[in-house]
Amino acid sequence: MNSELQAADGKFLDLVNGNRPKILKICRVYAWNREDQEDLHQEILFQIWRGLPQLRDDSYADTWLYRTALNTAIGFLRKRASRHARTVPFEDGHLRQLAETQDGGSPEPDAQLAALYEAIAQLDGVEKALITLFLEDLSYEQIAQVMGLNSSHVGVLLHRVKKKLSAMIKEKAQ
Amino acid sequence: MNDDALKKLWREQPLPLPPTLTGPQAIASINQKMRRFERTIWWRDFREVAACLVVAGVFGCFFFMCPTALARAGCVITVLSAVFIGWRLLSSKRRAGKDNPNAPVMEALQGELSKVENQIRLLRSVWWWYILPLTVGYETFFFGVNRNAADRAVFVSVGVLMGLAINWLNQYAVRKYLMPLKEELESLLGKSTPTP
Image (tube, chains in turn red, green):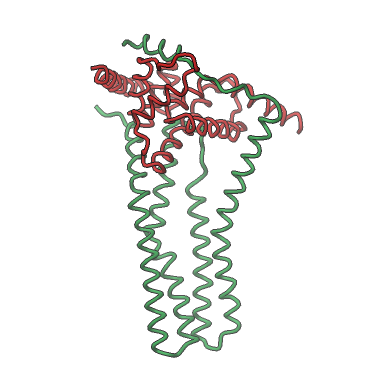
């Protein structure tokens, strides 16, 4: 019993530590400032811990982790939006977020990255999930498994989201 | 910017990674959060059922002390109403199902939508399953213990006004919070159906 618990603890730590960049990028996509990012990060860790007994086959760990993190993030976004009624304007909030979360090295946030995050911020929860998975270099098949859609539909949706994103980035650049 | 350039930009972004989680402290802290979460859920369910049990208990005792048949009938109606309300709250919660944060994104959203729709149904019909049975119960009880016409008129008016106010608050919550949430979820789920 004790060794089972220790195995679960070890599995959790491996999963979380091995996927820190993925989790952090999802937090940056869905949360508007550092404080919210930290809250969302904690919430994702909690949901991973809560759902861990359901992860029976480790070969699905990646898909499972993305599902858990994205579901938590979409729920978080909805709760925050209704609680704050978007008192932090998206644009300012996001630019500040990028500036705040730079590694302390460069004082100027990377303009292209800032433009990308700013454009992503204007997408809805599902579009954010799709574009994040695409940028994380998942195949259509893998995205379909995370989202619960079929691959061809993922292709259609991604095409639309990328078009929208590109238009927003261009508009911002002009 | 093409797809590869976007992916490169994404991959190479500077990330202030949180410290690596190690050892028993990290596990203890997450376990503590888990216990807090379970306690919150338990208390929430307990409060809903406890209120019904208190009402049923109080009017159950009154039943044996009431001088008139009408008052006793009022007690019976109130006790049955409280039991029915408790059952309705619990069964609707059970029907809505549990959260599944590990489900595919669209499935999890569908689950959320079902919960919101269930909540809307519950609040829209609050007059019939909550306010009316209780009001009829305690008004009947009051009529059984007080024969003064003026007192009865005041009590009925206050009871009806309270019922209307509770109903209005519930409908306001549906309009103000639940309908926008339902529309948002439907709009997100709209993407799961391919359009030409």
